[in-house]
Length: 205
Image (cartoon, rainbow, N blue to C red; front, side, top):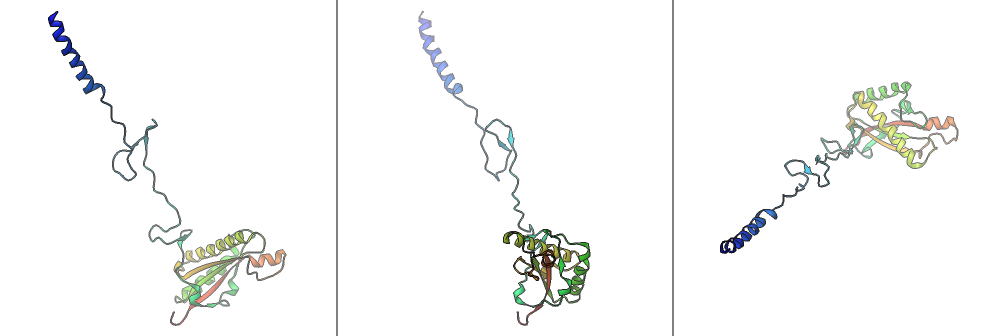
């Protein structure tokens, strides 16, 4: 009986110590790593497995090598047409006309593009401005964007023929500058156009 009285408190103390050292010990909860940290994929706290690291965001509005804004795959020209003498007569006969609501270049217009490319190749000191125009139908905003696509399409066509992209600037006037003020298809077909303006360097600029 005395033995029981001696061992009972000792037994209680052993049980209490065991609970204190083992019963309250928890498994560590997975820690979420911050983006950019080294280590394994982030543990999904919702039980869905591993979350792969997020891919980098590509905005698509910069040339990845130079940071230059691009039009399609061609960097925008650094030239300012206002720093040049503008000769509108030089390529007046090579104006390109477009189908309704389109920036597609028709096969029969390729000769005009080739003529402009050849002239620029023969005069490496000159540059070029391409103006995109539309007929009067559609909103101002829509036609401004369409005129831009037409000018950009002609620029790309010239680059494919060997003209440096740095020598070509583009502008869109939408429906603001019709060559024919009429309101019929004959006038509309003349106004859907891309014009080439030869740029001669100004002295001292």
